[in-house]
Length: 413
Image (tube, rainbow, N blue to C red; front, side, top):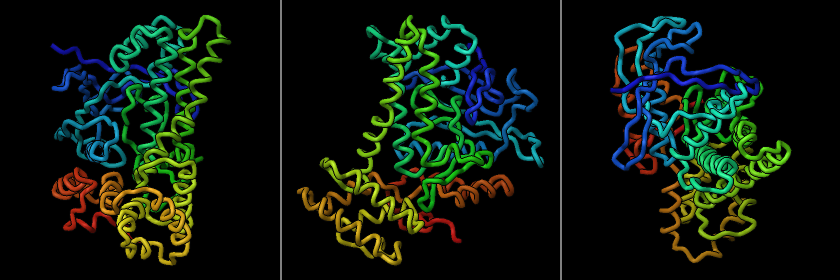
């Protein structure tokens, strides 16, 4: 009884506006209510051509399907809101890119597939009635607490901003780089969506880019909070006629919400960084301790994930691994003096602190070389054992799993 459909949307792609985009290889089968009473979209990705495929075939190759499956599940295990993969299925057909590749279809589950670009589609056409219908639907589906609000559309903008601030902070805490933060890749629900050229950072470098087409570094790791705010400003523009009939007043009220985004983001970021550093109370100088540690990592080009993981050992007085990571540990020693002074002002048992730090600082992330190795084995040799092993390891990212210690390490030079 389902009526499958493809969704239309617009989008700012690398800053340039495309008024007509849409699902070029995705098909929304329908919606289901999960056992928690939450509505979910069930979508096929790679199932064939759609009206928005342009000159493409609408198909998907096995490699990208398995990548989205793997990264999405890793993100979920890390506690980051994300679309999920329900299944990856071989089609038995070849997909033709540079070379023939095995075809596959991903079944994706999402809170919804409504994007900032969905709002942009109707706003660009001047169809404010449909923008209103869409906004009302989003409030009903994702932000029910806003029903009956005196200014529901301004409140909707504020709520979306808040969810995105929390989401991007979580990305930054684990070194995740989305790669293509176009407005059509930002979900109104606050979930991470569309795992294309994404990756997790190895050595800490704020300028890291993981998209071959992002030559200017627009979507670099450090730029993600700024780009989120830029995208939210585009959402705000679509809602102006709904916020106030006086355009100047609407701009002023919406601008106030979007301008507050950096402060919202920093609040979420600093809360997460306190947890990563083992701080349970709040002091004004905590931001200096957090940025100081990142500066020490950047100066040495040290592994982001391992440095925070080893810091949990240091909280117990076991500094061998983190000092070895730094090599010349002068930068660490200078920083750790301030950190230890800060810890001393809290009455927390070292073991309790270290255990809490291990619950937020993962030992395992989808290292690029491990992901590529697993995908190559599956695509080139039909050997799924490396993929299954990696998937199982990443399902428990905060556990030590000593038998898989090699998977905690970055790629060799």
